[in-house]
Amino acid sequence: AKSDGTLHPVQQAWLDEDAILCGYCQAGQIMAAVDLLSRKPKPSDTDIDGIANLCRCGTYPRIRGAIQRAGTAMQGKSK
Image (cartoon, rainbow, N blue to C red; front, side):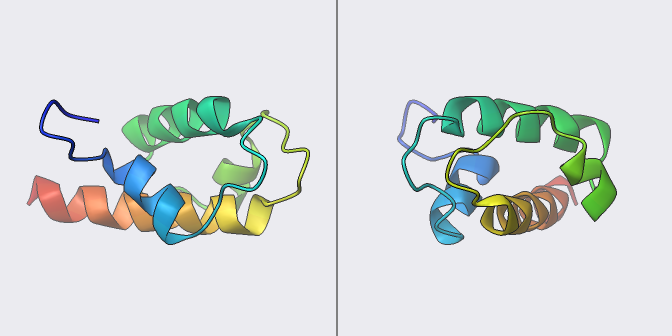
């Protein structure tokens, strides 16, 4: 988060998509998502599935939705 408390678009998308269950893997998932979006602003499902971090709770559909939402938000800010 920024010093004013504003969340990174990936962090906000994680909350919006309710991607967090137990939280065990979330730091790694979020860092991997930021990395992926820095390389591929519009990742495909295959790109997202290529993230090697494992989620014990199986929230992969929510994680995918959060990454797609964050990508859209980040593209909007770059215009």
